[in-house]
Amino acid sequence: MSDPRASKLTPSLAQIEAANHLVEVLGEPAVSTATFRDNVRVYVNRERLILALDALRQSGFDLVELGCTDYLKYPATTGTGCRFEVHYALLNRNSTARLVVKVGVNDPDPTLPTTTTLWLGADWMEREVFDMYGIRFDGHPDLRRILMPEEFSAHPLRKDYPLRGRGERHNFPVLKRDQS
Amino acid sequence: MATNLIDDELEMDSDATTRSQEYRWTLNFGPQHPATHTTLRLVLELDGERIVQATPYIGYLHSGFEKLGEHLNFNQYVTIVDRKNYVSPPYNEIAWHGAVEKLLGIELTPRCRYIRTIIGELSRISDHLLCTGASALDLGGFTAFLFAFNQRELIYDVYEEMSGYRFHPGYTRVGGVLYDFNDRVLDRIRRVLETIPKALQDMQKLLLRNKIFVDRMRGVGVLSREDAIRFCATGPIARASGVTYDLRKDEPYLAYPELDFDVPYCVEGDCYARFQVRLEEMWQSLSMIKQAMDKLPGGPVNVPIADKYPLPDKGTTYNSMEGLIQHFELIMPNRGVEGPANEIYSAVESPNGELGYYLVTSGSQTAWRTRTRPPSFIHFQMFPHLIRSHTISDVVAVLGSLNIIAAELDR
Image (tube, rainbow over all chains, first blue to last red; front, side, top):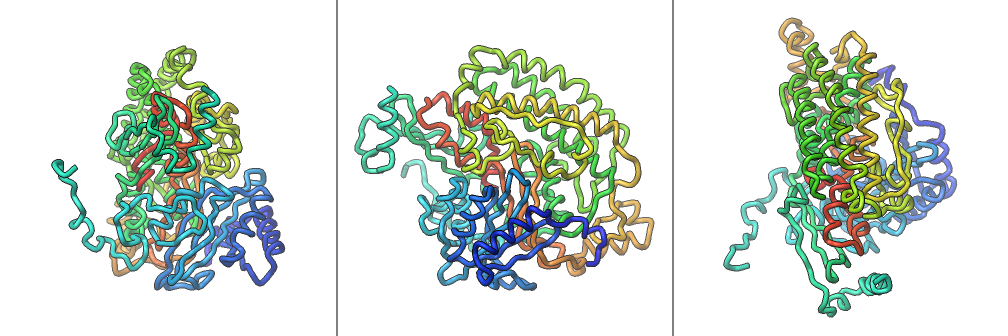
């Protein structure tokens, strides 16, 4: 798409500076950046995640959003090449700059360090990612399912989970009044 | 009493200690309870009437909205986002289509920007009326609740006139809105503008200096500025704690840069501060709607169909070749228009706080991933922190001031 009007949305100077600062802190080979419209994404690896987020926190950024995407059979190329990518959308309330930090994890061992040590608000968002994608967060104080029931076995937002479920709804355990 | 509370907090960490203390008892609150208004459950651990620990259990209304978003196209999904925060559906639509349009690179026409601003602010008033009114209702002030709800009916009348639906208008489309505003819609909005100030004044007279109400709200559920940031709070809740960030002011979108308004805030961070911030925001919204109505530009409301993505209106579809072809291309499931395969985070200031979408596309008209940042979900997790060491009767005050909408909480 070569839409001339789309080019109006560009990252602000503060966003680019923050991304460059992060690249400096982490060292060049550990990160890559991508810009699209007014978004700046910084891809970091799992080992450097906490270092990156802590560096951003100290320069005034705060977490506003945490979520995950499953790129199984995604037709285009992704930033990390991993199946799952967890995004941390950060906001600097002084410079109004936004930055998205992305980290990729793969299926055999989808584990990430927790960010609840930096922001308490990450607690439920990480639980939701665990619930929906099965990504475990090391050091999370209370990593339980949050939206799905405890006895649910699958992770429903994974791309290989069918839209209509696998019959869980029809085999749901029902507690009768005389058993309670 | 004070020392007891500190001891309690120290011992709370260990589950075993808590269970062995026999004088504590557990109270189940919800999932069906008149004061939760929606379906959510709290397990309260009590020492007499004081709450030692509150544990929220959610998910009762989980309906897989985000999974559905991966199977419906951009225009179809608007009916689902309406049902997230059903108290202010237009703002959900603005957030959703704002994200889609940002990703596709569509720039709205001036008239559409103003129309969306007007319905967005109307929905903010509607949301805040319910929240402030229900706060009063839960604390025994039934009259104020009726004043508020009466006005919400008038806002529903506006929705009905502009889209045909009262509760879930489904009004926005990619690159525009469903129907342009006509004179009857503008008349109804003027009627809202005329009657709401009186209702707001009545509510303020009833509640702001009401001893019973103020005593139950002031100093209850205090959220400090640091905690607001640590808990990722946004919107009126953060502004009541002194975080003066408003996306309408700081990252302006739609017609907000052309409107003159203030961002109200408090520093106390208690329930009463949140109540005051919401009341004041309604006055600001009224002023914004008035300005937007005066400035409402003419011209087309939808972007031209040469843009490939927007759905043509019925007149264009049935009376022109290009319109018919475009309608066919967008509607038929085996056709579809190619778009960028990329991802974007886009957020707006919804009545409840920052409502964001992390939207990933794969080049088709259907999203690959529609992650919602639901403000209710993020605000509700600080509930145990806010309610600790208060009494049972304060639960409804804090719940009401957080404005938890369970459909948005569980999606």
